[in-house]
Length: 616
Image (cartoon, rainbow, N blue to C red; front, side):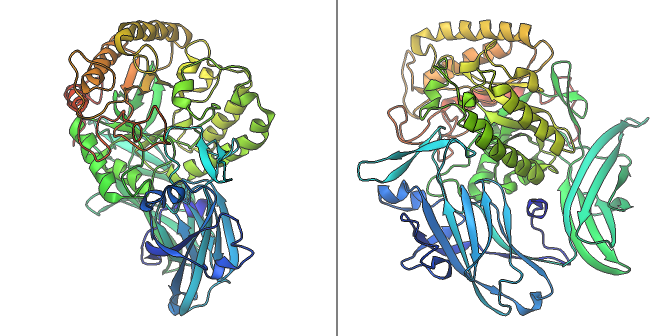
């Protein structure tokens, strides 16, 4: 995947054509498109914007809920001057699997709906002419896909999604599609690790080890530029160490990014060039704390979703930027990419803004339930997800592949400070241990920076039940005591339940930092009750006041990320009022009362708990 993992850049040697816009689109419920030649032309297409989820564009239920094969097609002009180039189409994501055809020839396929892949075009295109690009996408889920889910069949034979997760199965070409023209000899991978060495004057020297992989044997160079565009260091060779004196470090909410310009040279001729903007920082776990550049941090932020009206999960730079503005307004410094890798543009914005990102693989639904938000709080009945031999045989390879693609794509981002390798898995069985060990080991092997690894622990697997806590470098707890457990007038019981559990965790894991990555209440904006009742804004406030009281009682809790930043769409159900309503903001990004409570708390709570204040 290495070349696909390089974010597309226009340089002196590389060209990009954005293929966003209107494509032809057609459902293929009978799966006849390949045999009927749809790869060269759809028989009855409609127009469909890309990038976007197709679901909420339609006005009929059958189309919105469509589950199966569907096609995208458009004409692409290939300039004649690109004949000496390598040509690829990069799909930033296709949910959940895709086959790509060029002029009727199948050129690639890909499994997984949240990471990029490329289709190599050389030998399949006509230069200085129009070419047909068709994509056959499928959005079906099984227990052996990442994420996990199933299929329900209606009385008329129609299939619909039965997800094992609590968000809508938005589908399609959800992210940008680009045509890439690169040199025949090109840069295909670049990785860095950073060591910080204190200087006598109080500054820091950054020792940056790098590896650079190309498709040829010509000379390679790396040049490092500061934010003013001045070169501060350079090196030659496919691997080495670059020393940057008086380095500006990347810190929480005080980011600094260097441009690493990588080049291939044939004597004095530039063969290829690619760059990335990279922050210099270290992340480690020590003494029950998460340290960034040696300083303990207190994480404030949210679990989020890529979700907005009409666009669905389609990349929307306006909504994404609004979300960052909301996070900054609240005094947040972090978020989790729940429950899948987000668009790369979000990570680049997090790099620039100094946000600590817990980057999550799409391993959600590893608890057999189509109402997992409720069943997550109850003890497993009978065999668990991981007791099934087919999960070990079929799901694990898909999971490992998803971890590999996530880390390959995101390994250079300064904002990516930790990996979340599962969301709410049912780790109550010993059968989960060998599966989880393989996933954790693979992440450690792949990541050159050896970031901390974890997973979100589900209520079903409270302290003493979870069999895999020894694998996590730090613990992330998802708890809804006061909502799904002991809600309403029983909230005082919920407080006691959680306090008692935390004391047990303190005994079981005395050396690990803990943070809360989900907690909250469904709340209808504008519903007010005195005294508070569930679903009212007042109850949401009461719930959060209880949580804050608990968090402040345990000095080894190092972060709080409520669920969720905004309300979001889910599968329909009697527990869901047009989606999940746990947001601090509505789906159209307007605040509920709790947003002001969190803002007051977070603005008063420093990003670094040792008093360190980085230069901004």
